[in-house]
Length: 316
Ligand SMILES: NC(=O)c1ccc[n+]([C@@H]2O[C@H](COP(=O)([O-])OP(=O)(O)OC[C@H]3O[C@@H](n4cnc5c(N)ncnc54)[C@H](O)[C@@H]3O)[C@@H](O)[C@H]2O)c1
Figure (cartoon, rainbow, N blue to C red):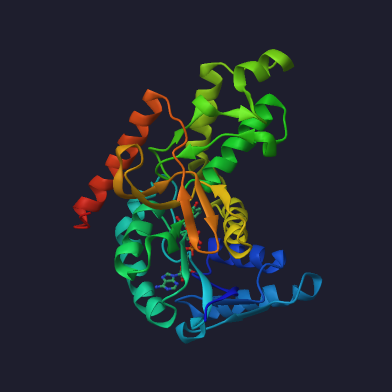
């Protein structure tokens, strides 16, 4: 029997440790198992987080082995190489492909009914691979997709228009990477489109300023890595948001990455699209309206990912 109160985090580097800390303080889980190729690192992180549990809510946080995943409902994979300054996410592909393969070989036999959440990069390619290797139903294999990128967009647009980012409704979709796009055609502030919002509030959202915001979102990771070596707080909070939608069966719409089957003429790739998420994973992928130009950009993002999958011999 699958236990949705139990979560595993595989890979406890910058991202995995932050995810574990964020989940432990959320009260969402009663059990968190941490695994890392470096067992001492997982043990150290588990002990450090456990020491703060009495300030939060009861949660058993421990370093484990694969057999500890037996009834685990959610398995989060954050293992593998991260970007070094100047590296793209795609540059990590060959290193992280082998790591993912070895992890899935150990995870799937012990918890064949879990939901897999891939965070390691390049996240869309690895999510597709995980679907193929694991044999799990497509809706139970999810990547963090453009959830973080969309949060960055909401933050920056909220700053630009001086409005609460929670009232900004706009998506980054496509690859979590250099070919992602902002869906400006349906961006709105609580139902009011951007031109009307600007007219009422005296703000300005010129094509140039929106493009600058898009570029800043797209290049955020490069800028943060240049400054502090890795990104982890934003993704930690994004993973908590995804986990909450699943564990609490919230049916929230989040742009996670999952197998695309014919949306916008795209199929046999995983990429970030607005998705209804609940306790079974993907409940539905939504066809939000796109302009002609946005649809072309999405198709080109998908073609880039499919090309990489073809090179890896992962035909659809
Ligand atoms: N999806 C996103 O939005 C997003 C955001 C930030 C980072 N990331 C990605 O997350 C991944 C992790 O980044 P990081 O900064 O934590 O890297 P890191 O180097 O700090 O940590 C990686 C950890 O993985 C462990 N590991 C390696 N091989 C393993 C294996 N076979 N089994 C178990 N553990 C293994 C390492 O020991 C290390 O502790 C990277 O691929 C990075 O690009 C994704």
